[in-house]
Image 1 (cartoon, helix red, strand yellow):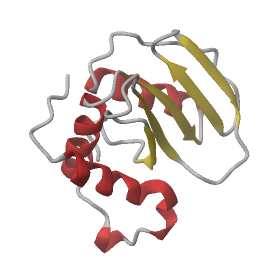
Image 2 (cartoon, one colour; image 1 turned 30 degrees about the vertical axis):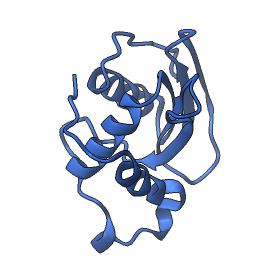
Image 3 (cartoon, helix red, strand yellow; image 1 turned 180 degrees about the vertical axis):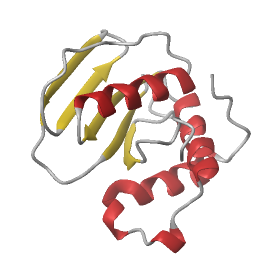
Length: 139
């Protein structure tokens, strides 16, 4: 499980909000994988649970990415949807254990993490498209 080091919540949110329009981040301004992981850990720590969405070139890539993120963020679930051909969108809600995989014709690639909290003081926001390989050991 990924254990985040202390980071101010506002700084974490500011860093992650850069990914809303990922095509606009130049390589020289891209935060380090360590900084992204740290920021994501901080916002996830301040939410009750997360919902995950992945835009990937293949179902295999999407499922592997989901499993890496789930493991890093402390979830035990490892859903195994039936693979389909082509680019995909995969959505997983750990609270309901619902997993949906469908064809995706868009151009974005990456992970969307939607933080869900019952308390308005905590994090209720979606971040992404984060790197697919953030927790796979190749980021």
